[in-house]
Image (cartoon, rainbow, N blue to C red):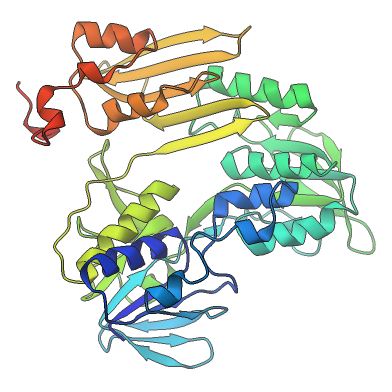
Length: 427
């Protein structure tokens, strides 16, 4: 097989479209462990909440695979990879040869060793099957505990709450969304959750899940001595790169599968993309795992073009999160919590608690490298451009940014004729 893709998510869609920009004919095989074609994982919370139906989950129309000469092998797990012979082996013993292979195996839910976590009534929330399982459960329960106050945990909690379930979020950090938010933004978000009746407990974790004599979940013992009655527990702490297949095949891994600036691994003909890949972070200037949708698609698209023979470099990913809490929109991009003792960073903030509005801009050596917006996010795209393209910021531009008025008129003239190179600025 000319092209084989292991994993059937947004990175695989990017790879298919990247390949087809260069090679219109040679067949592509996509192997997916789930039984559904590629779907929007961020939409699973809307499915659980009852806001959309399953037929709206697909990333591409039904005929996408047929039109692109893609053979789908769904419900199939790859058990082995031989990079010397260029053969993969499925769990059923089928051997598949490849010329170019993309590892887009995504992430696996992280489950800490909590006593009582094994057994019925404890769920994860990262895929379609998890959402469908919780839909069936939600109608028969009154209370739920969600462990984890990050993006996955909050969306799971919101979806269950919208189903009429009394939900308590338990978060070890001192605030929700601690990686994407600072204290001010987190406080506004937590306040909005509290207003609608969603409970949040921060600075505490679950030390044991208690079950009754028949094995049913009845509650959670907390590290502060508290106890929460509940009928189910959703563990939504996060995901870790699913790189075991690559590691067992001696493909180089660190926090994820290591790739170069063309998404190539150290194994000939093997590429990686998406949540499993440790690729360039444009702000950090080093390889990191940044598991967000735009990065996954762009990495897959870049890998696909390279797999098809077109030399294409990956410009790097950018950390960003966008989430709305019951009408309170938020977005964070880039570096939002810089080291307090690093004098190269400057922070400008404007908080209006009454209007539930917050703007935080983070500058490093004169450039905008990150921001947080809560409430008014209309100018988010403009702020992102200043971060992504490392646009120079003069005094007038900085004043406009701090006033919440980013303007394309402050971009350099050469940016518009595609000669702009942020790496070649004047000293």
